[in-house]
Length: 391
Ligand code: NZQ
Ligand code: ZN
Image (cartoon, rainbow, N blue to C red; front, side, top):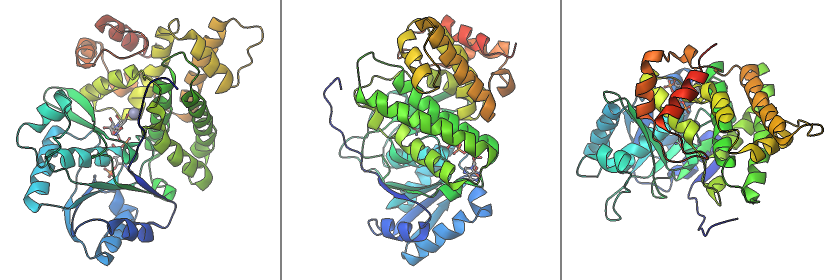
């Protein structure tokens, strides 16, 4: 384990089906005014809203509702939330939904009591709230497994007019204080959202795995999680109501991006950076933008991380090494990844996401460069996108 680090994560996880009891228990630690945030209404049709409101009433909370948090939440919506949270001086933000609602709630929690241009300060400059600035605690009831937002500091917001989708990873004050994880809540997801979430998990694991060349315990953990995601995905796509598979997927999602696997790893994150830029141009579903470019990306950087891609092929995809050069094995690993993308029904090209030739320069300009195994140039990004078009 290279590097010096301190590990701490404040999120208390309540896993399983006893949501009302768990939520009442979790709510005891917070003041009376709760801002309840949610998206476009799925929680009203699947019954999650009723359970949450019942637990809030039972806990004697005063509830202020803020709905309509859209996938890939916008800066305009963030500003609305800031106003509502500040005017009502809320004690807790309870996010009920997927990564967008949880990310959004952290953004509001960080920005509500900041006097100034929050977007510029937190997302563009990447600053943390000052230690004497109030931040609002966040808790979540998760309905989509994928982002890991329930146990990390990430908050991805899109400035629509300027076509900029930026992720700020806040420190521990903004990491949710609790997360209620009921795998059954994910049963009502449309198949494409379930699949997008599954690929998002895999991508978080890959983005951390494909960095560094030391012998790290973290890599062995990642391999175990990848194998579980692949095995469970194969069950879930055929039988979406399979609790065993969906609960494994939910647990994997949380651990794939909850700060643990960052330890001792640099991370790559270029697939995410390009996918965010695609999202800013097309509003593509996050996980689908990732899957659409992953094959082309890993083929593009094959020479830089051939050794680890060969290990990925052997350990994750169980491809026999005998009779193959390291390069052949690495290529077989990428091919297995691409086959799996098609098998589970994730996007395998950017054409289907609405990316056009005319957007390529803009998407490349909107991609945050700098990290990564290979230092990508703007031209490299354009090449990866071109390689991701449907032939
Ligand atoms: O708005 P509602 O009605 O809730 O519908 C949502 C939305 O349309 C629906 N949905 C969620 N749970 C459901 C459901 N529909 C039926 N039944 C349920 N149980 O699914 C749609 C997508 O929801 P969203 O929250 O947008 O999806 P996801 O969880 O994938 O979040 C995506 C956002 O998270 C960011 C992405 O960039 C994107 O903005 N990310 C956040 C990260 C973090 N915090 O660390 C890391 C990720 O890499 C990612 O960038
Ligand atoms: Zn992601």
